[in-house]
Image 1 (cartoon, rainbow, N blue to C red):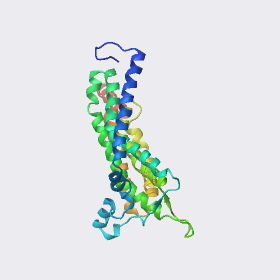
Image 2 (image 1 turned 180 degrees about the horizontal axis):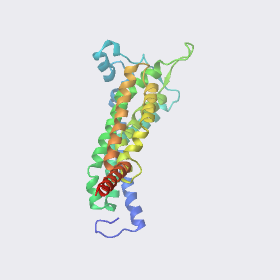
Image 3 (image 1 turned 90 degrees about the vertical axis):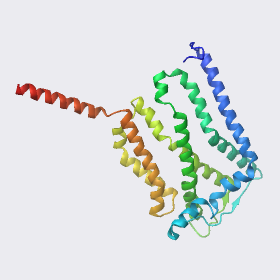
Image 4 (image 1 turned 120 degrees about the vertical axis):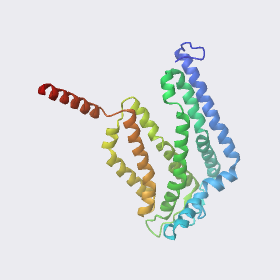
Length: 281
């Protein structure tokens, strides 16, 4: 890797450069986390607590489509059992939202660190990777917030083992589940990009992904069945985007890393045609 003066950088120089990239990335998280922390009323009333209300966008959307598709949680009363729980959850939620908002800048810092070590051709090949990754991440976060979270909150809040068990919800439990429903989806939606780079180095092929297609579909359906209410429409709604991502990944792997099997078959066919023509002569 070279610096701005096109001179080779030592190992310590690399560490120093990496340290500053990490510091700037962490600083961006801190800045956005502070902004979120100071916007307490808007963030908590309009974002974090919105999925537990009947007037949440997703519930209204499905009810407008058809009364049969209406769903939503019963009235959920969130409690705290520790004197500092509200403050700690305020801190935790501000941090994670800071990570979400600053994600494009974090990717930009990562890109600036690895870019000098790439050839010009490689830089052109993955140009726009920051924008693509950011778009997929926010798309996954939106899917987790507007689709997975409403279904998950509704199912879990209404699930019961016995009428004798009171289903109270602690603030920490709700925030942790909301985080689990949203953030992992942002990373899952990066699957096409991950597959692209794995295919570039020859670790993944389209044929390999096709082989495990059925297994992947079964896993997706199981996950959808767990986090959605027990009806087919909800499970299909959650499953389709994830299956679509897998199919896109198959296409990407096939384009980036063509199947050796197909190449061998073409080669064998050419050799066979050549031998046939030679025998006729």
